[in-house]
Image (tube, rainbow, N blue to C red; front, side):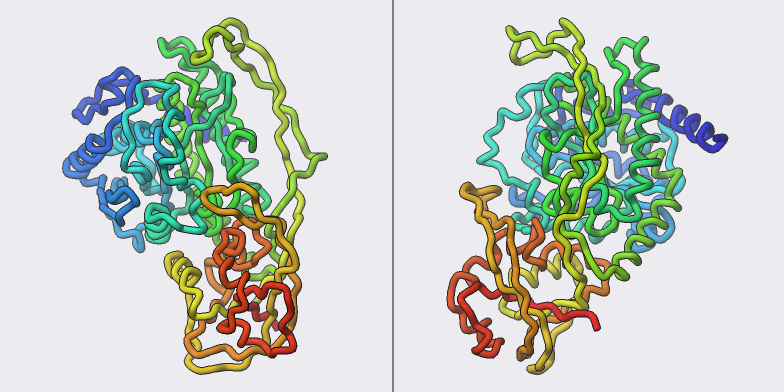
Length: 526
């Protein structure tokens, strides 16, 4: 009990010692502050801000990374009070928090909040973390434009924009490929994605979302019982203190937003991808119908609180990540997908604004109404697969090999033709979407039939062992039944629909049948 009390005191000191709306004592006032919280920054001003900040303070470093689909590069901003920025070194000494902003055009509150956060850390205007290095991607969409307050957020035609939010497995865009390179360079212990969600008239400003908790393994208990409650307690204390302030902030809950508001929790999402590497990953989202100033302030306080929690729990987070990685290597079975346990639904009472029907573009504070939201507390395994010793990938599957290499998967090449016993898959049935999603007529509800056989592995083909850090990534992409497998994203449509001798010749002729042959083979554990 004493430890809990000390922790709450620490969070109060960390969160309450400043507000993002003060005059910077050493310059570096953001456009957001100059506009009294009504406007976001431009891309050019964003880069100029960080360039000047890194030139002025030795605790800040700015790096230029790879080129995106816009022709402009991504950047990394790193804060380390000790002025060391070698990730191989600092990852051993401290934990690393990676923040990604601006995944879609218009979602700029994280961009502005991170500018305020990095400046205040550099100027020591807030308490500095002792065990944590903060790394941020200023924006994943370099064509971000200014946002004049609130409701123009989703006025952009999404058909003209790259749909990055579901591209972190298929990696069709340069931006997501560069993000993967950044992720493996930084190797974060904690990952935060900032965004906006439509949450209707909810009185709360800030929400969060994780992947399905059961997929976190050893991190699940810590996230649900310690991490989220501590953030919620700290934000609740801070919001109550502001009730007497000029900012119209109301006491708020730190709630997960329902799947209907943002359903993308699979490996193709940014937090789903990050979680494949045993990284503690969350979306932090603001409600885009709120005033922009309130959204940025809420995001700023959430990020600052997360830093304080992580800084306190570095040893625990690192230990749980390591134990989860070790546990995956020992598992004989892996769960590819879960279903909500209908018996586990928990009702949460929240307070809503009642919207004025005559003012469709604004929230009228006429009355407060109560509503109940049901949240699932448990999920049940629905599709499982045994964990193989490894996979054999034909050398002509260059699209697969390239993505494995981008994600630092260890590959070995067969130096000569070799006969091996394998498990091959035949696609027994699947459902293909009638309408494209993210540019693909995806395959769903795939069912396979497995066959034990001997094949001639050709010289130059690849051996991929599951005995490596990327085991979850391999299972989620190479197993055709997985929701975001390469098969589900149409990687093999051409070769599965034709009588391709270059892969059918691997098998004895008497094993060939009319069902499509999956081109990647498993080698089972002995």
